[in-house]
Length: 226
Image (tube, rainbow, N blue to C red):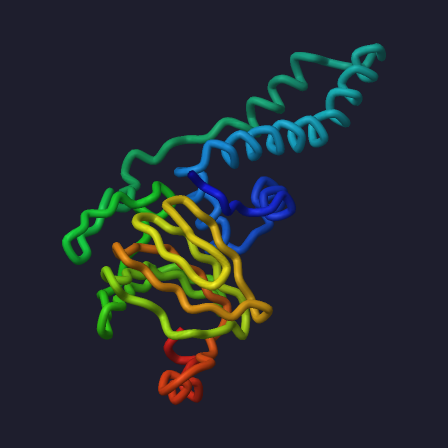
């Protein structure tokens, strides 16, 4: 069961198309798992469409009462705006439906199937592969934590969004399962731990800051490893 979702204001911005690319991808990927958010986005989309087209409908209604209104001309203008030619020579990017990591084969959300995936890099039970998404300082990655693994205790200099694609993990704030959408920032300090292993899709806007033990030695270069 999915217990963690984007809040309503984020979904409103998603519908309006004003979110950064990486965050929009995270929302769309979450909706692959979450019927509740798909339904909410559908309602918000219908509401936005009604607000957008209500003035147009009023204008057409008023114009239809005048002698100068030409419905055929109006329809031809709409058709001209919406009509486009399809270039059959355009090559669409090859899609990837799943990845193999560890002993797992992970189906990918539709929103990232056409995004290039860079080489996996690993340290101990942690492995990460960058997604080739150009979005200012925000970086998108796939993160694999092998069974029994953890991420050292840390906080965030910016924000970090995590979408759990497979498996489960827990931290000081709770337990997380497939489809959960977690947004953390500098107000949060945690140490994710997984018993069975997990694969996450993440977006970070800045470096993390380790808070305990030898991992704190990495903080001076944190900007280069987030």
